[in-house]
Length: 338
Image (cartoon, rainbow, N blue to C red; front, side, top):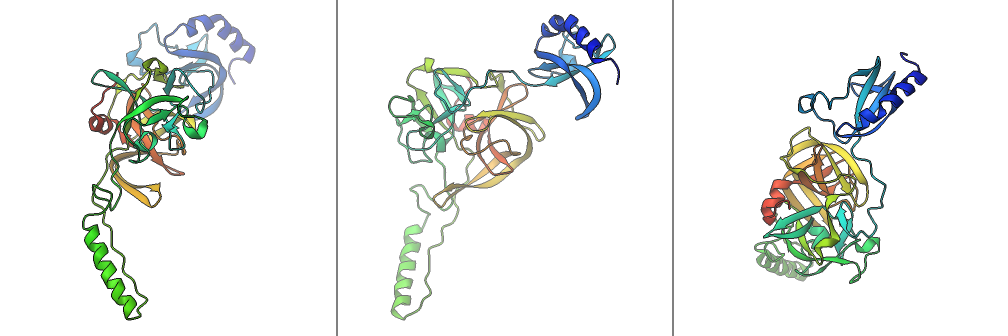
């Protein structure tokens, strides 16, 4: 099985300071080496790193040697280690990944901070900050969200500033389908005739889908900017933005499931999303990942392994997670990263 455990422990103790001083290394220990995704029986020195970078992007000094005194090493991309905090609690300052919501909903997730016209805003979903089109501009946004104990006004952290309206299937600009009045009248007349002649058959107006959606997104202006923190719980600072690609490894921090990881499994997705109360909306140009979220994670910022923002989580099922492309979100709201 190679070197004995005590020999490995002695070697690690003698080189621990050197290994811990290398950029990106957050932990060292002894464990079994993983090869091709499978754990072997070979004991090795494990170096946990915030992010596993390609060797060509590291200097020779920063590289972790393949072996130390004949003992193999292994690099584990663990992400940063943080003291566990309940994302459903009250945070001041509040980072991305924690509970938030319009005063009239249950709770969702604070995505991240964005900027528009030199003003900082909170980014999340329409259905989190704007109650699925039902809110008014200026409405109170609570942190934590109402379901998690947030109360108005003592827990108000922001006010709703802007949202991209969600077009529900069959609805026109005023919440009714085009020609809905006419079709209702025709159906009413024919149903009256049917009733007169004793027929049990009834007609109902047919509502057709008229509009497709790109994003479920909204922004809110903080009452006090210092009440917000420009990082994401358990992830850290956003490095930039990037276009999501098929097969990309991603991560998020959300109100319900906390820090989770996944992979972009589908792109160019068209999906029908159920918002309850017989409201269904069709979204196009979406991303789909595996099961990495649950109810309450809506609004989570989705990042790649290098902390580039790639999307905004807004829906899911038991097996899948649906994500807005971040370019579509930023363009729809005319915002950028701070």
